[in-house]
Length: 211
Image (spheres, rainbow, N blue to C red):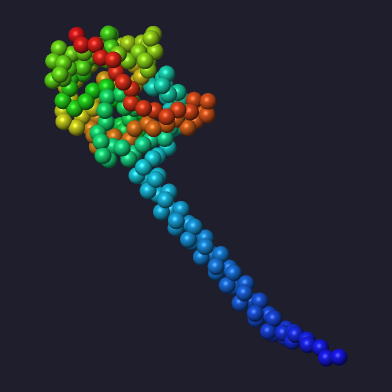
C-alpha cells in the first residue's frame, strides 16, 4: 500500500518561519494601533479645541441656574459664525486675568447702555431710548435678590455686559466692566453632570416691558 506523507520542516525551518510570522503579526498590530490613534486624534482634537469643551462650575455666582461642582459642555462653534445675544450664558476669559475663565449671562449688547439698580436691569438702545426693564424672573425665580451694587455703563462696539444670575454673590460687569467679543470662548450648550440635572440650554425669550 502506498501512502503520501507531508515532509515535516526541520527545526531550523520551523523556527525561521514562526519568527517571520510573529514579527509580521506584531508589525501589523502596531500599524493598526497607529491608524486608530491617528483617526481618533483627527476627530477628537478638532472637536475638543474648535467645537466643544468641558468646563467645571466653581462657586455660587450662577445659582439657581448652575450650582457648584456641575459639569458643562461649551459650544465653541456657534460664535465663529454669530455673535453672542442677550440671554446667552457664556464662558469668557476674565479681563484682569485671562488665565481664569468665568461663566455669566449676557444682558447688554454692543452700543446699548445698561443700568443695574435695585429694580433690576434696564437697557437703553435705539429702539427704546427711554429704556426697558428685563424680565428675568423666569430663570432667576420670582423671589430673586436684586443687585446690591448699582452700575450704569455704555457699551462700545464689540463689548458686552454680563451678570451672574446670583446678583448678590457674583463678580461681573458691575465690577470689572464690559467684556470684549474676543474674550468670549463659547456659550453653554448642556449640563452633563449631575445626571438628574442634565439639560440642553436654549436662548431665553425675554418679555420686555417698555417704560
